[in-house]
Length: 255
Ligand code: GLP
Image (tube, rainbow, N blue to C red; front, side, top):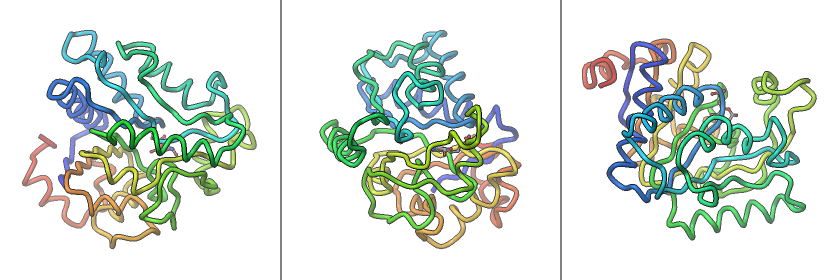
């Protein structure tokens, strides 16, 4: 794992955007794996700015998002489809038919998960996978005790995840109980993985991911098994890393 400890959250988001832009320049037809959540908003804002400045283009790329809530149609205000349209797809030059998310409103969520997994494989798997992390160590919606060999499937959300994501909904009880998520093995097939975590609320999960045992109890720890994983954190999220100074010696200021 490459650990980049950045001075603040904005710098950390900018570093994540740098890696995505570099991948697009190196391989314009790459398949990006995309994430949602509050942390990613700054990454997408930075990518929109780079695109506007002519630094990167999504025109030849395609994308697969990590997950979607079961029961929410693409036009639902809290769907991840809507999030992606607002924060990225509607503001850069992706071809409309080249961006993919699971359909939360599919009549058979299990079948939709299987279809989505097959579509990722048919695309040749993910080139660069962008990830956030839940305070409980989840990636995508792979909650603790998810099989490290899991593929795209329906998962039940943890109470703490529903509580954390309630801020995006009108009422806490509106947060769906189920989601379709890429599996941990799906994520690990990506050529390159970039995980971004900022803020003190992620410090414990970050320490368990990087320095704890590889365990289904902390799904993000599976990234220890990936050959090309970069974890980008700000100082607050790095606060519980035993070897923080070592990582900072290797990559001063996250550079
Ligand atoms: C959700 C998403 C994850 C994301 C996590 C953290 O549960 N499914 O992909 O990493 O939230 O989100 P935030 O960045 O808002 O803390």
